[in-house]
Length: 173
Image (cartoon, rainbow, N blue to C red):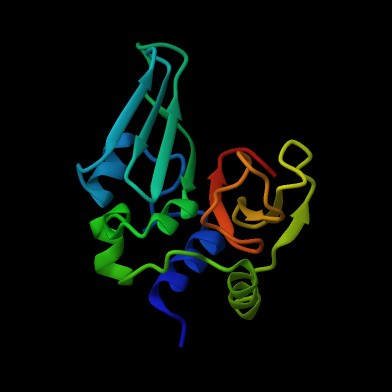
C-alpha cells in the first residue's frame, strides 16, 4: 500500500495537476479548490505568485488590462523538512493525510514506474553539481533532486537523494 502523501506526489507527477488544478488555471479556480489561505506576491501588474505552503502557483500577463495566464506550479517539497505540519494545505491534508518531512527520490521513481510513468534524467547545468533534474514527458513535470551537498547551495536538512521540488510548467517539453 502506498502512503497517502506518496500517492499525492505520484498523482502530481503523473498528471501535472494538484487536485485537478492545472498550471493554466486561473487564480479564482486555484482558490476555489485550495481555499483562501495563501500568501500573494504581485510583481508590478504583470506577474503574480500565490504561496499555499507546499504548493505555489504562478501567473503572468502582458498588462493590467489582460487576465492572468497560468505559467507553472511548484511543490516546494524541501519546506517539509522544517517539520511544520501547517505547511501542507488543509485541503491536501484532508485528502492525503500526513506528509513525511522528506521525500526519497528512488521511492517516488519506483512508485511511478509501477504506474507506467517513467522519469528521464535531463541536463540541468545551471544547478549542477548540487541538483539533478528528471522529466516526465507526458505530464510535463520535472523533479529536482539533491545530488550533492553544497553550503549555501542546498538545504541543510535534506540528504543526497531527497526531492527538493516538483514543477509542472506550461510549454516546456
